[in-house]
Length: 302
Image 1 (cartoon, one colour):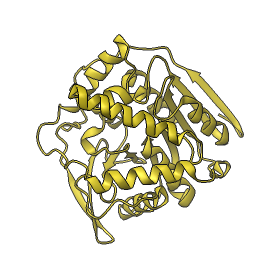
Image 2: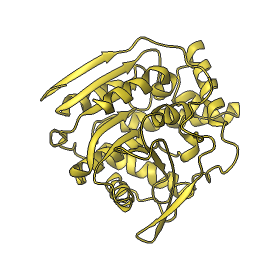
Image 3: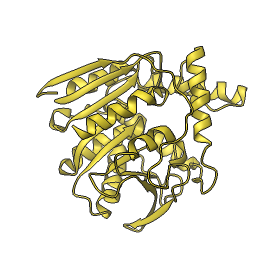
């Protein structure tokens, strides 16, 4: 990577599987305890695993997600080498308060949570909405961010917000008719390989049996959707001021955030590399976790 240059990688596909979770000492994502921390009168729920030392990697999850929606293979794989902290932002899952209806405020809440740990610098891994929040953190507190991984996400004001709404409505209707999770249709292509990846993904999400997170509330859903719509219709941010190294990843057939939006975002970031995973959708980094995780570890260790 260099100044004003974008490295683009097209990755050959590797079949996903449901192999055993990577062990970090005695704890993996399926059994790490959920803790809470009070920040500014709000109780934040979080889980922490991996080594005690080094720059931590803060995970920022997607629309309508809680802690249990993180793919264990991604969490455990990165926590094998890095300190990982995943949390529910304000009003999400088991965290207190109400979800704000702007990604700027979500970013401020995340900054407050990170600073409450006393960290001077962190790495960020944001997926989908979490990628938008990660950008807000980098714009509002640039000294706090060392490196970023932005997966399945695009820039504010990038366009296509009406298409995202239409796709989401159709997916939820299909999910209701088939008594299934809408992410079957939103995250994975309806090909044999995509359907297999979806099955494996949902199987992995069920590995944690005890101490599961609270479901996301109706207020949180509405506020997040309002925040996404507002961001989509807003003026674009000046991403040239984000000079930290950024790893941008997406599937080549993302119905939620078109890969062209991820590519546009990467072009506007001065120090970005772009990886597009084949035959995959919004959940491409989960479908291709076997190549995504090593790539992230290499990027963060660079």
